[in-house]
View 1: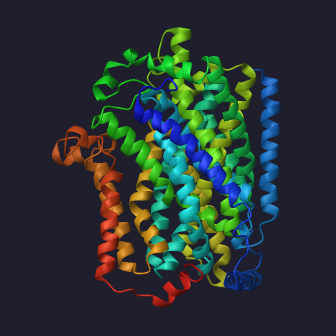
View 2: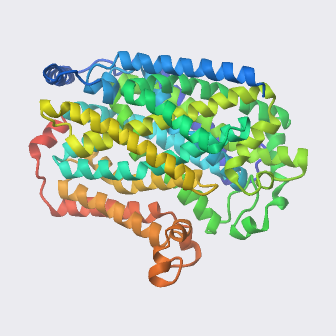
View 3: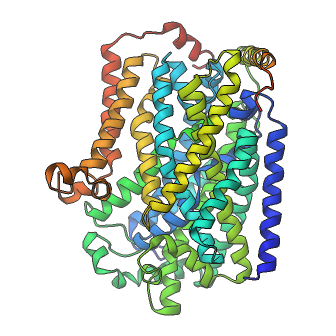
Length: 64
Length: 529
């Protein structure tokens, strides 16, 4: 099949294509899912940002 | 190649890269921007950056050359690259890494583990190991890029090494991770387009998919005697089970790199650069297609280059390259492809090399500045020093890389990559997975797992694995023999021994000790079911 007589190499060739298709379908189906952050995550994110901003403001010249 | 066109194309390309690096620089305002891209990276940029960082000149030139030598059994590495490197990495580990990274405000891979276990030692030790060993992998990438420039343009090897290092370090030092990821996205897009053209060209030139493979199958009788003795059975057949070549292909190249990707510090950090799981879902789509097109193409083209060279010159690829597998892909591009593709491929290789190098230099810098020196817990008057040390670390890493690129032997690209990937996986994978999934993991368990991985890997490299033991010469000096054991043991990759030992130590020591930091465990797993 496909000019490849060895089963293990043929299997690898087919798996490469199959896994790519799986990844593409997975990404497509889940394209718009899991986008909303939970309250907890939003709070955590805000907390770290505030802490970092506070620290950066205290430092002359900032990070870069 | 026309020198005028060449200069114009390179100047255009570098201008685009400089523009992207400048955008990153302009948008970098604080530490989170510099180290994590502000946790607001677009899924396309994240996926392309992950892919372009993962797939370097090592994959295209080094492993493509290995495929020309060993055959299409290397496609099992592409299976791992997509199955493990994208699907498992993004879907299984990526989402937890992102959330736990946010919970702990971790900015690097060592910092994630260090904070999860309340262990400055873990963060410092991991940072030090990365800082010391990563230049080996970085040098492998740099050698690949420089060999291409040497082969295509006749630029002296040493000049290429220096020019590349200076170019890349400029935008890494200034633009931080944002600069790195923006340029990665551009470079990844170029790589995808160039490799797609190459794939179509090779199959079209050789009469289609089945005919091309069939022609390669019929060359089995031309396998050199030394490779036959190692277990080579033809370019469309796997190596003989249990042979030296079987262990080299499946344990070092396929397993070492295929599994090793999960514990790569420069890749793990990318999961922490996106805002939500949605970006990771979208990145799976882009990442899987990208890896298939780049690595898959490189292995197929590498193997099929034997058919092309036999048809045109009566020699197989490794004979054409005078025994240096790193030269096969450049040679094939130079002789088989139309001259216009030479320009495109040059950009592909520049992109593959620069995208990986930039991330490596960034990781080398943060490993010493953030992980080893400051732990991210600097007092305000030390903040500037952390940045200086990070940038100093990048410069030291560059110098070490340039030096290694000059002294490392020919045909080393794929091996050096496999060594780095294997060492990272042996040392860090078990504690990393346990940290993400197992609340019972203790600090002592993680330390034991990391140390066991490092020590066993080092022992195997010095005393068991033939190619490294011969170079280091420690075993020879102490025992009079190149390796302690003979037979296939000299070809078994250290990962096969070191990773299980690391897993056993991580689990056993954790079970025998108490969790020291219940509050941190609770904080780490907040929002993670």
